[in-house]
Image 1 (tube, rainbow, N blue to C red):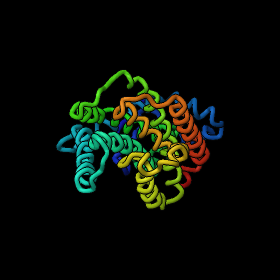
Image 2 (image 1 turned 60 degrees about the vertical axis):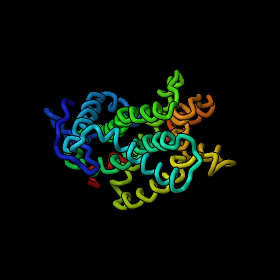
Image 3 (image 1 turned 180 degrees about the vertical axis):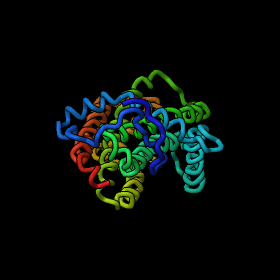
Image 4 (image 1 turned 60 degrees about the horizontal axis):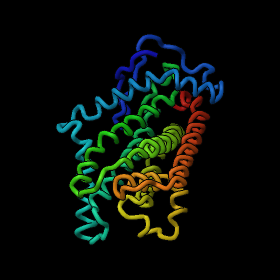
Length: 293
């Protein structure tokens, strides 16, 4: 497959690629050759994933007055609002609350945007999927990669707040790649599920809105885990990998401490399992996408 060019923009402002030169029939037997074949097909289309991701990043803020600056302003403004409510009005006793909350918001936004944008990426690319044979996973992967790269672009805001609050940045950030990889795996797994489900259940958007709102409050974004789940923290971390991911980032950038090796390993394993389960779910339903769209 060659270059990815704009052929419209599905819901979520994620661009749809047109595969430039050759147009092959809609999936022939590709999806019937098993997960191993599909994995190989995804790898062979890695250049396409890179092209779509790069284009997503270019057009995300194209028509915005502030453009890329919103990547930095959005988590900062949200943190200031929560800081006003919880620190001043509700008298939260969390030290350096702005830093505490901006880490949680930045991490959550990358995940939530990945899931919500991926939900529409298949249904919003129906013309492409009906006309061109390629692994449908490419669209979801590019959407998640876009948001996870955008997360990296938002980190300078976190570093700025760290400097203002005199929070040291030390070599502890060498654990960052492990946590970042875990977050990508988890976002991909849930995004595969939301994208595939939305093809068959049109109520997915309404259901997911409720789920994501509840998930937000069950994840320690605006509160310390020890204040709400002091005796059940371990269980919460096990059933909610997002809680583990947020806590891991906080340990690095807020507490300046290493996540415990077993905690880090458990988080990584649970996120990889989510990725595999979500991908298998997507792969099993993918052959029916064309007839449902």
